[in-house]
Length: 48
Image (cartoon, rainbow, N blue to C red; front, top):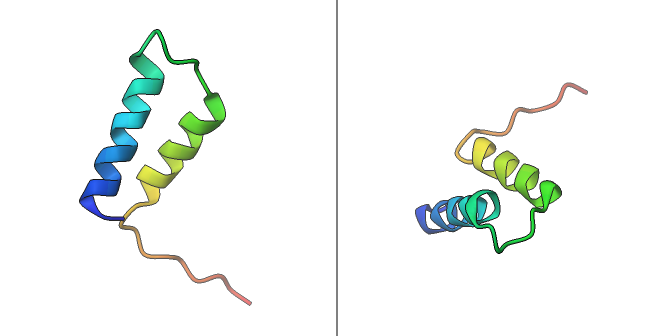
């Protein structure tokens, strides 16, 4: 994920959590948190 993508996701998350005029969407909040938390981490190969 690029710096620009990360910034956009953080701004969207901030807006969802702090802007009283934006309807809370818990699914989107968790989705953004997952994307942000896994950004830059190498994928873990699964055992067969």
